[in-house]
Length: 368
Ligand SMILES: Cc1ncc(COP(=O)(O)O)c(C=O)c1O
Image 1 (cartoon, rainbow, N blue to C red):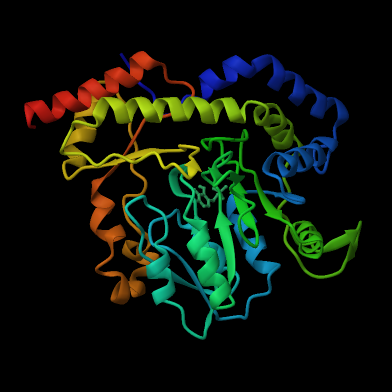
Image 2 (image 1 turned 30 degrees about the vertical axis):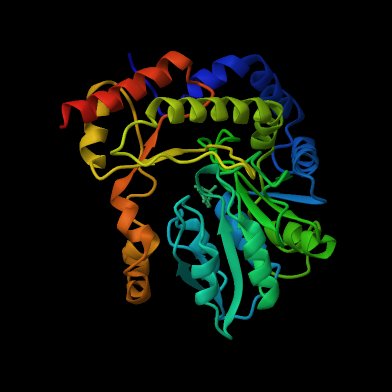
């Protein structure tokens, strides 16, 4: 048996008629930039999440960059974000002339509010919570900390489409959020795409203009912006897929629950937990084990694809090596060599989940 980590070909085969027809409409209209599908997606995603403004853009990195941009944070100020995340969270700070500062993570991989608070100083302007692997960060304590210290609080929701925190959709829990629709995400386009969610009309307008060369009218530019627009083709694909998001999140939750049931007796691994206050999107199902590399190799030989997210935490990356001075003792660094992402997604059936689980148990019984 072969178990794929991600199966976008299967997803396409199930949605082929809808996607092909949506793509054909874009070609028939020949409105490749700012076509009506883009507006439709912005409206639908804003409604889906329960926020007043969705501003589409070229990718998730730009979404986070624009989100920080429109908040006009003081140049050179510090932005606290978790040490274990994709580099884009930190790049958004750097490209705005801000300094990323890394907080440690909790057992559940999201930013530790205590660690974040300990890093606050008079030069701190914001905190970015990342709903890593689709698990919502604990926003309530973060909100209290942000309010107490008069900081902005943002969400990097690039991995958490459809997830809920205390009954509310992620992306609506702070001063604004950035989403990625990179193809492998829970809601993925057929290329790069992203969006900013905001509840502030003025900032939303600024974000919209910034993504489109700072223009308010054709060839009339209020300020210098960037070119980061969602292609109409991507919006057309996303409009089809958005209708399936809830059922996909449900399917991912079923797989996660099965893994937890199947693997709970294996003492050599630490499993992610199901939290009563959240509905996770389960973009990734990440286990921890000291035998990560051997287990990955064993599973590969059994036909099971896995991933590592991420091989290095951000302070371990050459790009941020100077941060090691205060991050050396972090859980994020101690655990980065133990992380293994198992296949998860709506493409998996129960038989495959059992197969993966059996092979993991077999590996530890054989004591390789
Ligand atoms: C946590 C996180 N933030 C930001 C991004 C950036 O998104 P994109 O790849 O669309 O620029 C990603 C996606 O890879 C991500 O996983």
